[in-house]
Length: 383
Image 1: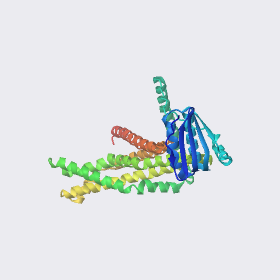
Image 2: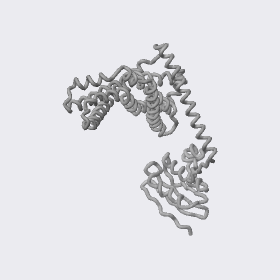
Image 3: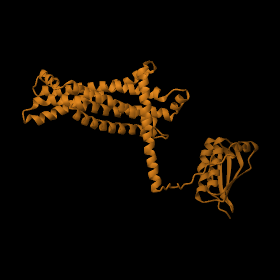
């Protein structure tokens, strides 16, 4: 005699699971609405996971009420039975229940295999795919640089075509919002470098040369370099996140559909704002570092006029404009890489995060590489 499984009881719903020679017989009764279905769900579904029944017979003859919740239970029982290689049969349905079941019963259920197939690639396929990815990224970068150059040139020739309101908003984000962190880091770097230099030069009685060193280092090298790295981490990642989010939401496709160029609409204002603001932020950084150096020299007993006179006596226009040229080039790298990574955003939940991370890393690497080229070029030019 077949053994009857435990029966789940509910004030308005009941389920009885009974094995037979062909598989399982599940008898549902009562009111299968949300509370009733929730009460009998586990007891109705759990026996299907114990083994591999060949067939499941669901008797609905005692069901008084059936809605979407009860229908979900029937679909779950069907999914379990089908995925285990068995079959499902419904019996004793009323006409209303039959019509409700037929609304969803004709659609096939997805059946996921618990075992994931492992993709195996040969070394030649892997090398070919990596090479293709490199050339694709190189092609996208060349296309981006070329299109951006053409649009910037057209913007210079026709300034009325530029979205100056967007440029102004981007300038506020790049410049005003980052002014505090730029001046703070500049002040701290000037303070620390002056203090460390004074400690080293004190044994030789050379503290008076600290302003000379600070002015040259900040205006020629550290000012544009550190400012660009800070803005690459802050504004470059913001550019990539904004454009990447628009691409995932298909807003860039909508712009293209309406005849608007995403490059002209989104990229050019950001490039122009970076060209305007990063050199300006570099000047703020240099001034803040001089304030930090002045604090150290005043604490060592040197008057302020001595500090300022030695700073500007050894600085010339080549030092200033050399740093500004670096800042202009670094601005193009920061904004360009951020926008390019945003346009290269793929689909997926982590795509925007990957784009922002790539924008920061790529921007810092390109800035360091360009700074090395500038160092060699200035050396051979005698600057």
